[in-house]
Length: 235
Ligand SMILES: *Cc1c(COP(=O)(O)O)cnc(C)c1O
Image 1 (cartoon, rainbow, N blue to C red):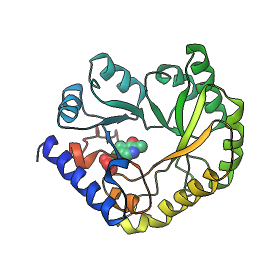
Image 2 (image 1 turned 90 degrees about the vertical axis):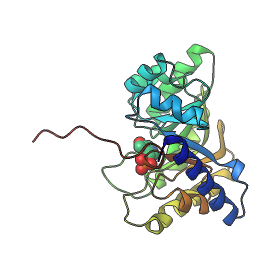
Image 3 (image 1 turned 90 degrees about the horizontal axis):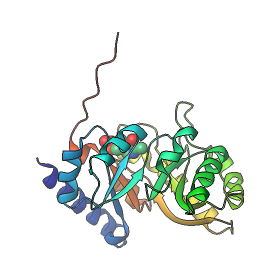
């Protein structure tokens, strides 16, 4: 299957899942997780109708951006972000999905204020409670949203989660439901610099389940680009 065929298939699946949930397919943004795919493959995906690219390493994003890989599409950052690298992304990407501390929010705001802009971000929640995963504990979320009002350079547009690796998509439903509940509960409160517009959840194995739970941003890599070939680990 070509990248174009895969994108058509994923879009058809998104449409079907949205309609089954009584939702408008147009409200769901497909983010192609482009990591480990070079500029040519990214361009091929955009030409085939991919509306948005999501990178998860700053260095890789900067190199591919330099090569003009993202022309014609939105660009998001979806990976773990170290505070000292925020300066490379602010103003370059339209959304940072993975903010999980007040310190990182503060640094993104500082960089945005310097540039005279406001950076859209999502807050990442560790819905599975795994120690190995990034993201805020659900119980910390309200506190962090409260703090967003102190940072004029950011605008919190919603929430993101990466659930534990599951064998079947249905196993992720409790995590997706938890994110939706947090999204609804916190959306009803009035926090400064916060507007709950986006719920980013669902990857190749489970984006349809995520859409059933209310996702309006899905991040799909393998189902578009095929298996990634990670370099073999040293023994
Ligand atoms: C790679 C990646 C994805 C996509 O994963 P696939 O299973 O290949 O679809 C989604 N979200 C994040 C944060 C990623 O790093």
